[in-house]
Image (cartoon, rainbow, N blue to C red; front, side, top):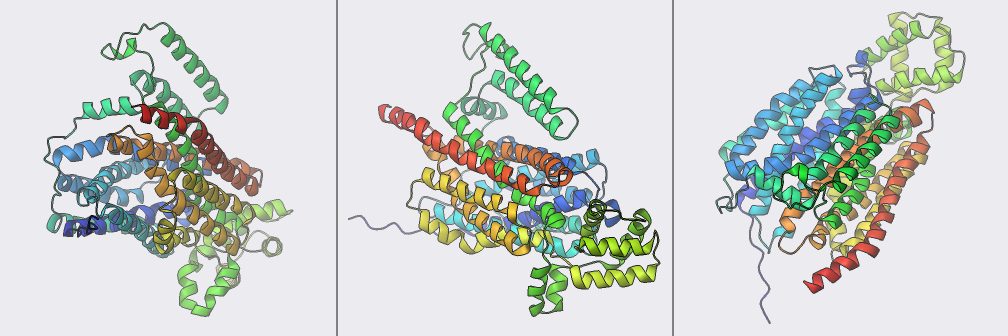
Length: 570
């Protein structure tokens, strides 16, 4: 019997890379966890005052590009060295995070956010590549397990700090993100050593990368078919074009490309791109990516829609009362209220709402007050503001602000959403141990169903306790499904090309971010706010997850057996 192979030790640079990952995730999630609140908070409260639709397009398009760019930046890193690429990434991100807090217009914010995405996309493949190069068959599973845990440590700590400093000033959120990235220059300059494996002669040119994309995803004609449709979705998702025009235009574009295909003779791959038929690369893998995009679209609602939903529709006052047993300091940290800002807002609203005639007007006023982390009963809002008769002095407004902060303060939404990362830090290793011997595809389906259930449970989550329950259920679905979705790529990929296909796995994450952002913005503005039916919105989001699970079942039943037969014959 062969002796059991001893696990190789991790070199120091492995831990240096993990430290850099912590700081980078603290910067990203420190901003992203509160981005929905910042983008939609009123200008008077320090936010940008964007609509939920505008918020959705920012949170959809930019992460979409972020997850596409590593295909190129990873190839550049292999050519110019990991250490140099790290320095470039941090040089881009450090000022960009700070600039996010200095711009206020939609397009200026879009531009700076895009710079952040370019920096993050430059960092992402290099840190993952470092872990990959510094592990082997004896410790790779443990190495990536440590790395995944580290990702969530940063994802947990960053929002805690951001939630605390935003009570002082929104600007400090972006200052802290810039500081976290800036700190990464220290380990990069003084402790990081270029990992082995970078001088093998296999460095890919940009042309080779694009040829790889053609093999995996499709040729240039296929890209020409797909890209305009995606761009039109972005435009419609931002509210700049009717969805009817998008659907009609997409249908016409598909028909034109089919006619183009019919008129092209089979002239081979060496012919000019316009004389080739539109062809999908590895069609089972492309179908798998499209199905997974549904999972990520549903998945992302926890992070981009739920904070705004908690702020606007959920009463977390009883959680505040529960936390009071740990002292006033804990309450002030988890549910801080800026009395000066709230008092100023009460005066402004008193002049705007001189008379409240019905619950509809009171609800609109409540939507204004929740930005200041107080949830006042509609009856009290109506009585109080009608008594002001159009004006209130500063002393009375300050006294009322203190009273409402004492009775109706709410927990920061980002702290509740952060329970997802905390659950993963605590339970991921246990969950991975339990499911490690199960086949990846059934586990992926089960995880998708569990995650979709957690999302759908928000349809009844009108209190903090119910939201916590929904988040924890979702977290277990994420722990089950997310690692398995990557593991299954090895089954889809042709022999010897797992690494190539793994590089394009994140296309599904990119598409999921795009679809999820558009779905979030439109769903929140139209269904939740305009029609006051947030429950239906969450059922739709959960339904996307369930439909993804059904599509995965069909894929497993129809496509996988065919692939297995082809593999046996080869």
